[in-house]
Length: 275
Image (cartoon, rainbow, N blue to C red; front, side, top):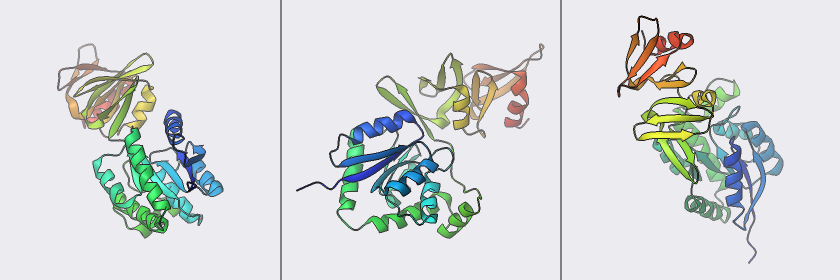
């Protein structure tokens, strides 16, 4: 019997993640990858053009996020394909995905987890569940935001903000062939070492290749504050702010690590500490 080809699009703002997922999908003879998209706007255009059966959709992206992609497709009266979310969200959101979405992949996903997701996709393509999944996706958005569906759609249509967590709960840090998941709340401070970031967490230090600016944008400013050109501190781990006779300020962390506070960041640090 000839296998039914599953037309697929991969959406992720990280080039390596897109290429890696595509390569692994192409090992499956019934998966046809039609396109890759690097943001939500590209995703809407590509889905409208190609009418895929399946989309691997990252949630946190510049421009339109994954939820807004789904809304935009509904707004354009485009059929919503099967969606497998690719996410770094924490466990409470994953439980919601289990209930409402076709499936999810938690970054970094292994081959076994990907295979399980594809098995679920194949089961859906052999039955008449696609319309049901579209309604479940709408319910998912409502559960994650605490709003009812109509209110969410009204907010999005009017350009009003929808309250979802824009910051990851986990950082996936690659080291050679290994990937370590570091809980963001366990990060004490971060400092730069050339082109690399040293992430100091409760379970030790981790090295990642990313700029300080990129990392700062990923972290919740309610808890993470830039203290110096080359350092970010988690306010939850700060013991005290000390001023020296020279006029310099230093943060003392709970583990007695001392971080210099530059003049340009002093006011922001004081505000974060509610001084």
